Image (cartoon, rainbow, N blue to C red; front, side, top):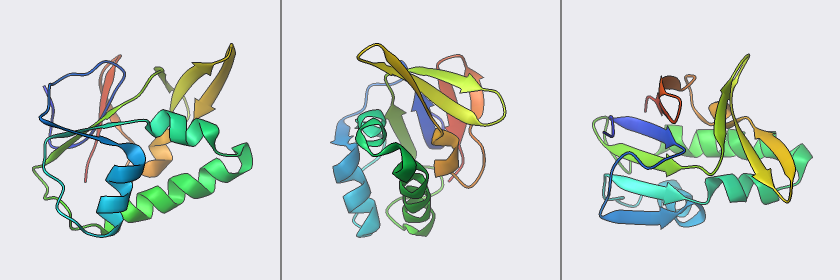
Length: 128
């Protein structure tokens, strides 16, 4: 079940009528366009993985500011980020993804004002 806020999932928890690629989602949010929710967002893990390692923190900071400033959706709306990896919650909330045999840790928790709260081993929620 999706909860209000940003749902980070490694296995989809709800079928949504709307699905957007991460680039399109953030383009619409940055432009304060209406985003129909609930919405599933795919490809965020690929977007970060394909970025230069030394630029990922900057990108996550930019995405955090985009989400924080946006008026695209309200406090009860739900966004489902579907990630191909597994959660690692040690000092920071991260996602470990495997590509070409190499494991990479993405500090996804930096994308939100507050650290995502685990609901299960495959589902965490960050507030808007």
